[in-house]
Amino acid sequence: TLTVNPAVVPGLTVTGSPGANVQVRGKLTDINSMLAHPDGLKYRGASNASGKVLFSITANDEGKSPATPAPPNGPKSTTATMTITVVPVNDAPYYPTFPSSPQAAVEDQPKLITGISIADDDISETTSDPAGTGSGLLTVTLSALRGTIDLNDAVPTGVTVTNDASQSVTISGPLTAINTLLSSGITYLGLPYTNGNDTVTVTANDLGNWPAPARISTASFVVAVAPVNNPPVIDPPD
Image 1: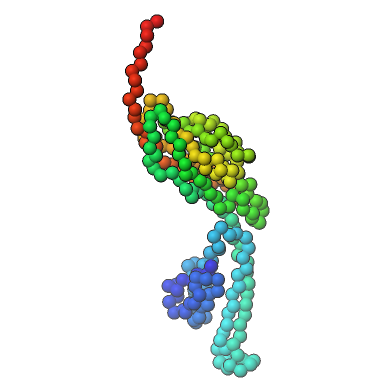
Image 2 (image 1 turned 180 degrees about the horizontal axis):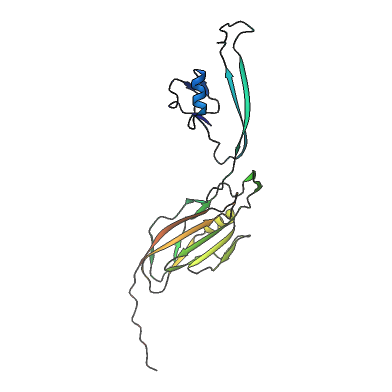
């Protein structure tokens, strides 16, 4: 998309801006002033697009020199082209769905929490500069300050789970398979005899897919653990 800023040179007539085909009409000196200004003409590529873009500019003198409409002195035009190279950047993962906060739980009782999903627009993208294709892999860490997190035992093919049922669980593998695992929910269990608010944090690392360097995205929600009355404990003498 091309955008001409009319505030740079107020005397110009601009049509089609912003858009793919923009026309600017006015004095030659004014047009050149607009083109030379850092905010005069700007290009913005399509969302998540990279690579080479052909840019062309056509100048038409409207037959003003001399002002004779008949050939060969009618309007004259010249077209020049250039290539714009749009360098790709790695977009960070994000969370299309995420649990509401707080999640209500009860002391010493497991709580199933659903609604976590992860997306990454360029995790499998192919680019020409740098040349390569994203692997589609990422790593997700789920951690709790005062509790443990347990995942479904049915782990999809290609996914590796480390330290399950602990305070910090790591999932590695293809994005689609990780979302399949997360769709079953996570089971939160507070530490023994612990109540009050806890924070569960989800961290997604796209491992540089794609391109490098890696981008990391973090989100969190609160688990409100209600207390229960625990029975007295008798410690008999030796």
